Length: 182
Image (cartoon, rainbow, N blue to C red; front, side, top):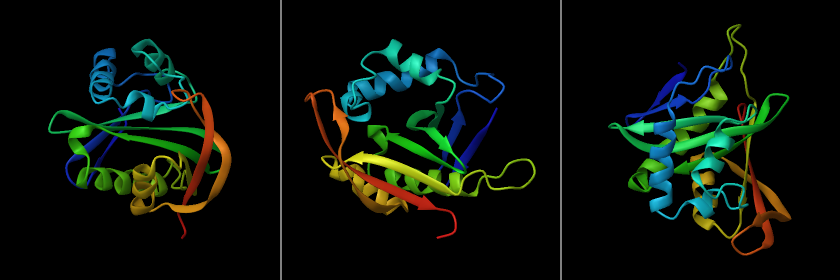
């Protein structure tokens, strides 16, 4: 089971190892889903409308090129993040914090996850990632602020690059990058 700890008592576990072994149960997925749904986070986290129900969430978590990590603190769901869009030493990250941990916990997890991603090494000692990217709709200024405070640099705006299913329109997104050697 692959997992890592962050400052502040947060522990993240990878849902599925590279060999396909699942480290968490469907019950864990449902627990996180229920927390996000109760808080009204589903249309914010999955703003493109691709995930509207628990079955959609399960399908996404089980897609081979989506790498999900589930965070806990004091045996409670604290956050999730997933990686996709892998290219030579880079990927996209998506992060969602559970409501009970908004505020200081948000920054601890944001900074800690980013630090972990940029310092993780493979078995030969080589860094796995050199660049981590994020795309955030500009109409979510809290998420944009959290990205910058967590260590990402805003590098530009991509016009009409995020589809908001709830409003049936595309909006501008900010592109954020964090580079290991910066």
